[in-house]
Image (cartoon, rainbow, N blue to C red; front, side):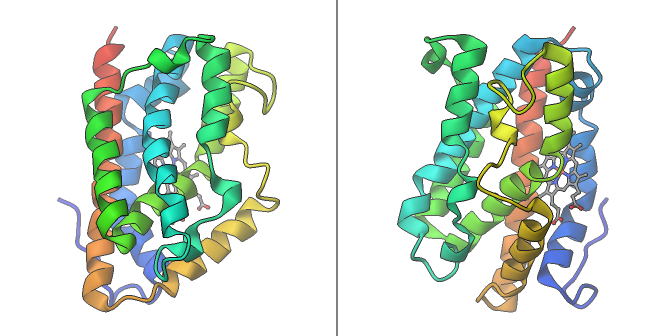
Length: 221
Ligand code: HEM
C-alpha cells in the first residue's frame, strides 16, 4: 500500500503531486510493456501501436485546449509549444503509411480518452491533472523513449517517427518544467480541490498503466 502524502508533509503543491504519484511512476516505468519496449524485446510494430494510442489520448487533451485557454484554472497551462497531435500525425504517417487513420483505440485507451474528455468539459482543475501527467512526463522520461526508438528502429534523430518526443517550441525544457511547477504551486483552488487534483493525477497514472497492460496483452510473446 502506498503511504498517503498530505499537504502538511509537502509545502509545495508540485512536490506533493510528485510524491503522491512516485510509486505509480515507478510502476509505469517498470511495466512489462515499457520494460520490453525499452529493453529492445519488442519490435517497431509495438512502438507504432503505442504511438496510435497516444494519438487518441492527445486528441482528447488538445481538442479541449482552445476552449480552456481563457479558463482561470486550466488556461495558464495551455501552451502552443506543448501541442502534440500534429507531431503524432507525422509520426504515424511515417510508421503506418497513408492509411494510419484506420488505427483503433484499445479498450483502456477508450477509457482514458473518455475520462480526459469528461474532465475537460466540466472540471478544469481535473484537466490540469491530466495535462501535468502527460506533458511533464513527455518532457522528461519521453526523451529516454526517443533515444531508444532512434537506436532500435533507425529513425532519423528527432525526425519522423519520434517527433512526438521533440518539443521544438520549448527552448529550455528544464526551465519550462520549473515554471510549470510554479504554475501548479499557484493553482487558484482551495485545499480540498487540491486533494481532488492529486487523486486525479493518480487516476491519470492508473489509466496510463492500463493502456500499457492492454498493449502488453496485444504483444505478449
Ligand atoms: C519508461 C518510461 C518512463 C521513464 C524512463 C520516465 C522517466 C522520467 C524521469 C527521468 C523523470 C524526471 C524528470 C525530472 O525530475 O525533471 C520523469 C518525470 C515525470 N514522468 Fe516519467 N518516465 C516514464 C514513464 C512515465 C509515464 C508512463 C508517465 C505518465 C503518463 C510519466 C509521467 C511523468 C511525470 C508527470 C513526470 C514529472 C514529475 C514531476 O517532476 O513533477 N512518466 N519521468
